[in-house]
Every structure is written in structure tokens, then in C-alpha cells.
Length: 56
Image (cartoon, rainbow, N blue to C red; front, side, top):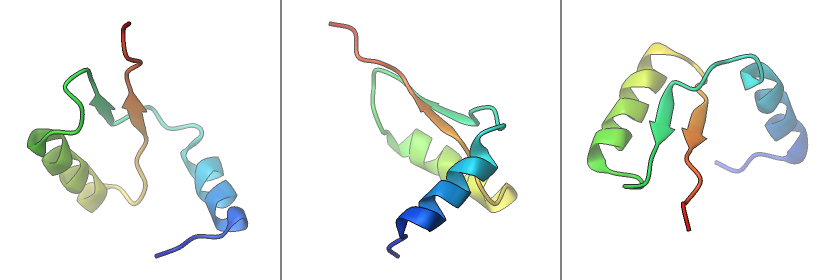
């Protein structure tokens, strides 16, 4: 599915007030994270994901 800019802006506005449900750490996107995302999306219509900054 491809979204246009207006659709992306609308979804961002819906998620703006949400707290992150899933956090991706230094290990990256693992099977456990993918399972958590799928479970969260089945419960919520939209979720916010936080990605940790890489430490250099």
C-alpha cells in the first residue's frame, strides 16, 4: 500500500499524542520486536514506535 503525503500527515497527527508502544534498541528489529508490533497492531489501530539512537 502506498500512501500520499496528505494521508501520511493525517496518520502522524493521529499518533502525535500517543506514547511509544514498541521500542527498538541496539539489537535492531528482531523476531520478538516484530511479534510485539503485530500484537500491538491487532489491539490498537495505530501505534508509535521509538527507535534508539546508535551509540558511536
